Length: 72
Image (cartoon, rainbow, N blue to C red):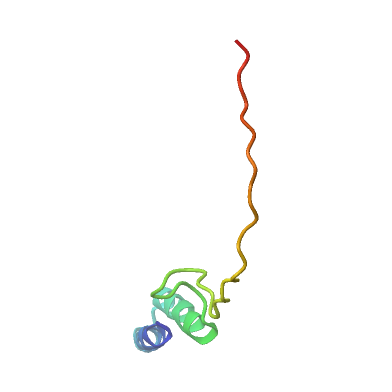
Protein backbone atom coordinates (compact mmCIF):
# COMPACT_ATOMS: atom_id res chain seq x y z
CA UNK A 1 0.00 0.00 0.00
CA UNK A 2 2.89 2.35 0.73
CA UNK A 3 4.34 1.77 -2.73
CA UNK A 4 0.97 2.43 -4.37
CA UNK A 5 0.60 5.70 -2.45
CA UNK A 6 4.14 6.68 -3.34
CA UNK A 7 3.62 6.03 -7.05
CA UNK A 8 0.23 7.78 -7.16
CA UNK A 9 1.54 10.71 -5.15
CA UNK A 10 4.65 11.03 -7.30
CA UNK A 11 2.65 11.00 -10.52
CA UNK A 12 0.09 13.44 -9.11
CA UNK A 13 2.90 15.75 -7.97
CA UNK A 14 4.49 15.61 -11.43
CA UNK A 15 1.15 16.51 -13.04
CA UNK A 16 0.52 19.26 -10.47
CA UNK A 17 3.87 20.87 -11.20
CA UNK A 18 3.55 20.57 -14.98
CA UNK A 19 0.00 21.99 -15.05
CA UNK A 20 0.54 24.39 -12.12
CA UNK A 21 -2.48 23.05 -10.20
CA UNK A 22 -2.35 23.95 -6.53
CA UNK A 23 -5.17 21.66 -5.36
CA UNK A 24 -3.71 18.63 -7.12
CA UNK A 25 -0.36 19.46 -5.55
CA UNK A 26 -1.93 19.47 -2.08
CA UNK A 27 -3.56 16.09 -2.68
CA UNK A 28 -0.29 14.73 -4.03
CA UNK A 29 1.50 16.03 -0.95
CA UNK A 30 -0.96 14.19 1.30
CA UNK A 31 -0.38 10.94 -0.59
CA UNK A 32 3.38 11.37 -0.43
CA UNK A 33 3.29 12.10 3.31
CA UNK A 34 1.15 9.01 3.89
CA UNK A 35 3.62 6.89 1.97
CA UNK A 36 6.67 8.40 3.68
CA UNK A 37 5.42 8.18 7.28
CA UNK A 38 3.19 5.09 6.80
CA UNK A 39 0.04 6.93 7.87
CA UNK A 40 -3.49 5.92 6.99
CA UNK A 41 -5.22 2.63 6.56
CA UNK A 42 -3.71 -0.19 4.60
CA UNK A 43 -5.18 -3.16 2.79
CA UNK A 44 -5.83 -4.94 6.08
CA UNK A 45 -7.79 -2.09 7.63
CA UNK A 46 -6.96 0.44 10.30
CA UNK A 47 -5.26 -0.18 13.64
CA UNK A 48 -3.90 -3.61 12.85
CA UNK A 49 -1.03 -4.38 15.23
CA UNK A 50 2.28 -5.10 13.56
CA UNK A 51 3.35 -7.70 16.13
CA UNK A 52 0.61 -9.84 17.54
CA UNK A 53 1.22 -11.16 21.02
CA UNK A 54 0.71 -14.83 21.65
CA UNK A 55 -2.37 -15.64 23.64
CA UNK A 56 -1.63 -16.88 27.12
CA UNK A 57 -2.30 -20.52 27.77
CA UNK A 58 -3.80 -19.93 31.21
CA UNK A 59 -7.44 -20.78 31.66
CA UNK A 60 -9.85 -18.07 32.76
CA UNK A 61 -11.15 -18.08 36.31
CA UNK A 62 -14.52 -19.61 37.05
CA UNK A 63 -17.33 -17.10 37.27
CA UNK A 64 -20.03 -17.60 39.87
CA UNK A 65 -23.60 -16.49 39.18
CA UNK A 66 -26.40 -15.71 41.60
CA UNK A 67 -30.00 -16.04 40.56
CA UNK A 68 -32.07 -12.92 41.13
CA UNK A 69 -35.87 -13.12 41.51
CA UNK A 70 -38.25 -10.23 41.07
CA UNK A 71 -40.74 -9.32 43.78
CA UNK A 72 -44.30 -10.49 43.11
